[in-house]
Structures are given as C-alpha cells and as structure tokens.
Amino acid sequence: MKLEVADLAVIILYNLIVLAMGIGFFRKTKTSDQFMAAGRNLPGWAVGLSIFGSYVSSISFLANPGVAYGENWNAAVFAFSMPLGALIAVLWFVPFYRKAGEVSAYTHLEHRFGAWARSYAVICYLLMQLARLGTILYLLALAIEPLIGGGPGVVTTTIIVLGIVVVIYPFLGGTEAVIWTGVLQALILIAGALACVFVLLNGVPGGPEKIFEIAEADNKFSMGSLTDWDLAAQTFWVVMCYGLVEHLRNFGVDQAYVQRYITAKSDGAATRSIWLGTFLFIPISLTFFFIGTALYAYYKLQPGLLPADIAADKVFPYFIANQLPAGLTGLVIAAICAAAMDSNLNSVATLMLEDLYLRYFRPNASEKESVWVLRWSVIIMGILSIVAGIAMQGYESALKVWWQLAGIFGGGVLGLFLLGLVSRRAGNLSGLIGVTCGVLVIIWMTFSPKLPDAYAAIRNPLHGFMIPVIGTGVILVVGLLVSLIEPARPAAEPDSAAAST
Image (tube, rainbow, N blue to C red; front, side, top):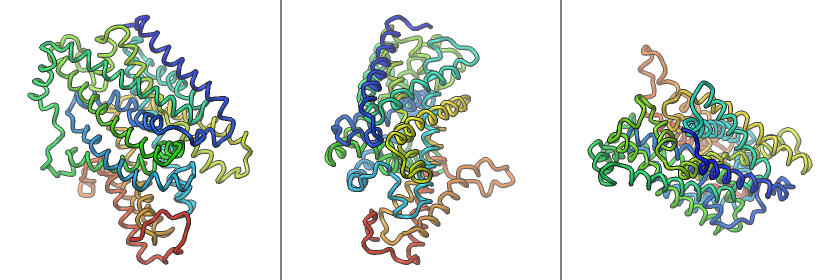
C-alpha cells in the first residue's frame, strides 16, 4: 500500500508544526538554563500532558497492541501500579527536587554519597535512554515500512531518517520545545488511539460484542491470577512489583521527569502535572491493549486479510497500512511519530553538560560554550540511538527487550536514591557497598539463565521482571545494614534528603 494524498497531508502538517515549534523556541534558548529548565515558569497542565506523552512512547503505541494480540492483558497490570508511584512522588520526590533547585537529578547524589554515585547514575541513565530511543525508532520504522513498501534495508533506512527528524526540535528549542511539543503529541496520541478503536469496533463482523465474545473464549483479557505467587513466571504480582519499581524510578530518578518538575511554575503545578499524567496514562494504556485484542478478533474472523506467520509486533502496523481509511492512516502515523518524538534528548544533553562536561572537563565554561555542548550532545546521542535502533531488528517483542534493559540500567540508581531518602546515617561506604552488591545481583540475574546446563544450579530462577525489584531491594537492605556500623553523618547536612531510620 502507498500513502494517499490525505494521509501525506496529515503527516506533513504535523511534522511542519513540530519543526515550527522548534524554530520558534530557538530564539529563546540563548542560555544553558533556558535550554535545560525552560524559564521554570510552565503551567502544570502542559507539564502533565508532556509527562503523559513521555510515558506513552511508540513502545506503548505499537508494542502493547502486539503483546495483547499475541498473548493477553497481563502486561496491562503495569499501568495499575502507577497511582501508588505517583503518590510517593507527590509526597517525597517533587518537594525534594523543587527545594534543591538543581536541574540535574543526580547532583545531590555526589553531596550524599560522593562523586562516584553521581557518575554511576548518569552512566546508567544514558545507557537506558540509548536503549529506549533505539527501541522507539525501531518500532516506528516497523509501522512505516508497510506504507512505503518492503525490501532489503527499508527498516534500516527508515530508522536513520526518523532518527534525524527526532533530533531536530530538541536541538533547536531545548526543554521548552520538548514540553510544548509534548502537549501536541499527547493530543495526537489520544486522537490516533481512539480512531483505531472506532474503526475496529465498526469493522469486526458481528459488531463489538463479537470482540468480547472471542476475547473471553480465548482468555485474551486475562491479567493473571491473583493467587499465583510464582516469581519465576510473568504473573499478575510479578508485573505489579515490576511496575511499581519502574514508576518509582521514573518519578524519582529519571532525569526526563525530574527536569519537568523543575520547569513547572510552582510546587502545586508540579504536583498537578504528575496526577494529570497518571490519570491520562491508565485509560490510554488500556486502550492500546484493547486495540490488540480487537485486532485478534478482527483477523480471526477474517484470516484472509492477514499474511501467514506475521509477527505479533507487526500486526498493528499492517492494520494501519491496509485497513484504515485514507486520512485516518495519516492521523495514526502522525500519532506514532508523536510518540517517537518524545526522545528525552534534552535531558540527556542536560546530564552531559552538568554532570560530565562541567563536572570533569570545563567547570568554568562560558554560556555560549555550554549551549553548544548541549546541542552537540543531542546530535551525538541521536546518532548512537540510530545505531541502537538498527541493532534492535530481529527481536520478536521489542517491549520485552526494552523492559529488560530498563530494569538492568535503572534498578541500581533507584536503590541508591531510596537509601539516601530513608536513612540519615547512610554515607559513602553504605552507598558504595550497597550498589556493588546490587549490581552484582543484577548481573547474575540477567546473565545466569544463559549459562550451560552444567551450571543450571546457579541460574537465576526468577522472572526477568524481578531483576530491578530484587536489585533495588538488595542495594537498600545492604546499604542500611552497612550504615549501622558506618560512622554517623553530621546532623545538619543541607543536601541530605533523608529521614531518620
């Protein structure tokens, strides 16, 4: 299938608006603080829509329907753990970061545990964002491939082109462009998802009730048993625990979200932004899973419409290319582009300036130099993400790959942050030993399942989603135990966010 004129018009119009927004904010980003913090005067509703858009990347837009199509709704449990993570963020994380005022989420870790802690957190974040954007570009390329025709190298070429587009607006407009573009992205995302639901509800032979009849018969709505406590399988509780840890990581130590708190004009605006993002994400996330289930019924009743042996991740892109009417195809592709454009490259650039360049190389760099470091950081990370996206090809479920990589890179940082939050005694030694033990556990849990059968006794028996959960717990528990023998920290340290234990 080739795109119709109406589809092309919608896609081109959306991208022109995004480009115009980047150019429009370019003139305002003359200082590094404006590039990173957007004047610290943005309304809470805009920041909240941006948070929602960041959560709903193309990883959700494309991978979640693929998971629901091929399996069930078990992965949707991830969304239900979000309100608890949001509550903790509102009570502790937002007040802490807003009071500190630092644009980097990891500056306080150096004051709390030493320079190694700050650098460790930054490296983990950069690796996680590299995996995230690579996955996003790959999934977006999968969606667009059927529209431009298959063939050798098409996905790779598409990843490269899309990667260049994704770099442009944060390069030009910095964080303010990212926030306001995120507002537009959120609206397009919602419109695109609802358009797909409308077409499926009216396109399934037998009507909407047939979708529910088939899904119920084939157990497609299952989220897992509430009485199944098997930690070696992807059960309801395993996904719930994984989701809570990931939401805490996002709200508590993810630079992209912390940076958004800083841009809000008040503490109340920052708090409202979290709740708005949360209560938009849950229903829209479930909408994506419903799309996958509806696709399952749609093609089960009309098997001749779908190529044989098509991978689950590719069913939704195929539907977009072949079953949506002209105009709506363009809207959905624009929505997927919107999801992909939340690249977090502005937050990556912020860390590369604040925590690496100024910290280790040029602490007295001029404003002009700092701004150019920020912009070059966007370009460098964009190139690396393109390479990661190309390497992502060949994996059947990109969502599972992303979740595993996020757990590996993110779990250790959350454990360290929580240690500083809950213990006033924990210092350099507690943090270092805790992180060392936690990282060793994460490495063992990640790679031991690949050991030969001769070493089966020492393989990790738990599901991969438990890696960040156990890793975070090990850092926290070991750190607290070591703090009992570590010399007490001074009673009044202004940088400490800890409560006494």
